[in-house]
Length: 640
Image (cartoon, rainbow, N blue to C red; front, side):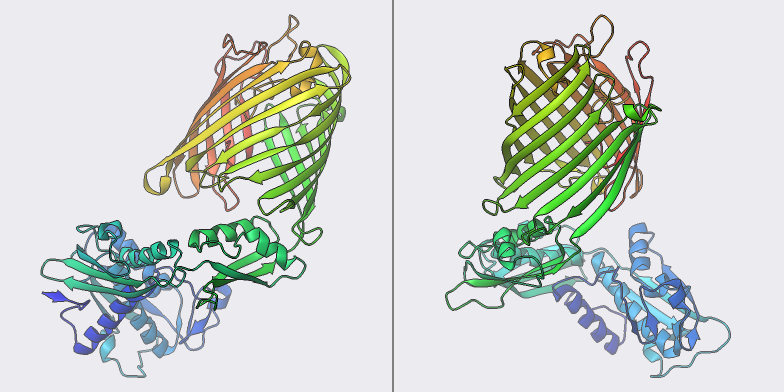
């Protein structure tokens, strides 16, 4: 028997109601979510309210709920409980007897929608209040006072339906139906809805901004427990992007917003370009909301007009951060910034930090830094950003003691969505005391870097990779010495299991320092070291390094380091991360791997909206004599 979304064994009126609901659930452009939240009061019911607000109910009526579902399917049971407002609000009274009846009728529709989402098109939902079917209740029901009103919901799920024939019509003809829905797979209503949306998206990706769905019909065959689906779409004409208007700006130049979005008139229309434009504008940090809309019809010249609606956020901000490790002590940072200095999203940031607190009691031996950073997006076109900075540092790690002042300026160019290249100039003066004595350096550098980043999430990636290579040709002016450093690194991420609850992450890095008249001619802060929370955990900061006969740290000319982590999600919030780090630093330009140092440990992660909070414990597998025995590291974000 083939039926268009009809449920047996119910009254004619109820069948009509079920059919209407099913058609609405499957023909709407979005599914009826089982987790919708309402921030208003209707029919005496409050949704998304605080406990304090829950007590403000006119004519409160309490009820007791019995939800019967005997399939033994844990996922289905959870879906039904999540969709049922009666179940979610069972501890809260409703307003009046009529409010209870209305809430029960609404719950029946929600439970049916949940059944369709689970591919159960033959399901039946019966609801009684005080022993009476809700379809037979009078328009203004009255229930006994005193005790909670008994409400019983009985769900007979029926069998799981699978997909039968999938037919594409209209401008969707010519595409392969199994690219959208695979016959034999579960016929979840959400999958059918998404298939229709994907047909429209694919037409829009062809540059057809007015593409729309014209039919999405579902016919259920209760004899075979299959569902036949028909999807038809109208593509409309191919049209390029036309005029771009910007509204909602107050202090930001709207012309800059339009240019920086890169939705330039004449470019081919693409939904992906709209998403990227929204992300690009959001990253400026000057807007609290961004909405990009296309017109409902083409302009006379055949283009599709676009509008960008924005709301500006607060432009001034300040904040603080901290990290801790047993090897390097506490570190604290503070910053103040302005996100829209001259009206085109120019940012100015003043920051300072103090680190190694607790490692020493002498405040003169702590590490201090202060910096002034300026960035101008769109400086030489929408794909470029000009950066400039002034920094001052007082550093006293185990390897050296230094006072450093640095001025830098450069440009970053976005070559694509994943590729950037940057270049600039830097001048640094350093007064350094290390194993080679006390020396002053005045060094001019031309830093160049190329980065490819395909990670799905910068703070907590589960797939993709990030690779970078940089060169810093330098000239030490006081000593008339040329030297250059070259570094490369790559990190990759591979997720497994449901929602990528298990992620294997690896990183490999290497560097070479060439030129110079011996190590003493190269500033100590430009030599290579490993150790600490960012490289090889279990060792203290810069502990891994070539040493002289007095066991003084010298720094090296080359290094190789590698890290492997297994990021295991125990719950949605908590994860465990066993890891192993290894690295070597050599006095020669070619790594000799004669002294490889490794550390291993385990970490705890607690996920937050701004990234995971990290706590790592590590021990060196081959510690230096008298060196660090273990390390505990805390911070925000994954280690890489």
